[in-house]
Length: 528
Image 1 (spheres, one colour):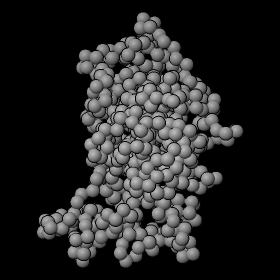
Image 2 (image 1 turned 30 degrees about the vertical axis):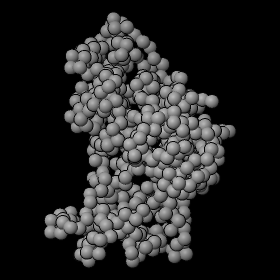
Image 3 (image 1 turned 180 degrees about the vertical axis):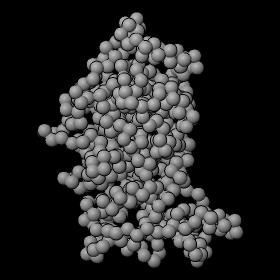
Image 4 (image 1 turned 135 degrees about the vertical axis):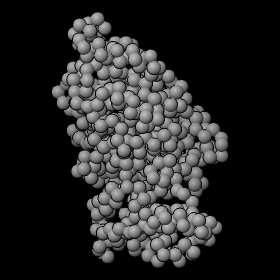
């Protein structure tokens, strides 16, 4: 019998967040390369036979648009550890999905573009990360291309995000003239050699200071002076402040050419915390070696056209999971069997026989399981549910082919369960013309694409004039529905949302009729 505590100590479970085009997906693939999960041709995950598949951006729309739209789970061994890597959507419109994924992570890596630094979407995603109180590492990518000054980037991270960068590596050479990095832990100069298309691990040459000064000249002297300045201002790694979210270990490199990837991955394994006990909603602590418990953070259908099924992903929170074990579904109290359990790497899936705290398991066709649910063995436990974000965009959706209404209704229900969009229904129109509510408009594009391509339901969207939502109750709903510029719709969980055409009209009603229930929703404006 494997010891859950010992196995948990070997797990490192972290997420990657970034602005689109910062290089997050490339970095993800290079982690897999260094972990031995890629063939010699970068970007090709080892799969059955000679079949190839994308490592993380598996959805057709992702490949068309060149951005991450949905989160992905990847697992690989590195050194004596098991790494669980959660690749998140890069666009702020999908920050709600990022928030859900971070519920399953023990830390996060923020990827920045050396030429752009902190961008608005970067800030939004960081706020999501901070909402979950996760330790954060920073990787400044694309240093092999022209970009901003290193000290300027460090300063902008502190002033705009509010965490103190503590560089673990420091670049020798300005962005665009990348010679290598100073490893601040060892003091070594690590010189990198460019590899063909980054398809293999970057050769690293460790050079002493005297030789580095002779061979790199002014680039070395400048970098050495900047490192001394960092030490003088106390920008050194401290594990306690890192775990507390106060400081962010920072790295410079180039994911495309593999510069700095190994140093980042080594540090992740060294300092990211292993899974720890989690608190249940009743205040009790579920110890790592307690009987099995898991937390569902993602539901996804139709990941592979050859399967056309539904997978509920959970993170193992405690104990040992064994395929085929009978577990209890906390919301219903009903038992179910876990015969169809898989580990999923991008789009590929493999039957999994056991898993330990920090691991991610996919249950196939567990129809009653929803995002935020707890499953367990032994003593009852419930982990904190994941609140939906406040929607900011609203559109009515209808099928344009009455003969495909059954497929339309099935698709709408599935997208609602996955959290692709929130589906709101009125008393009058019900399923005929539900309102799709989203954090960002790109969610509508994904919903339409999936309804038409996965469920065969052609649809049309009609924008509404609503701009803001508040939670209300059945006592307040009739009065609100009688007002001009207000409507009350219902989520599938029964929550009533009052939609307003104008925040000014909302403010007036709140002032004049304080007896009406109008509660702010979680994470209004994105996160916080």
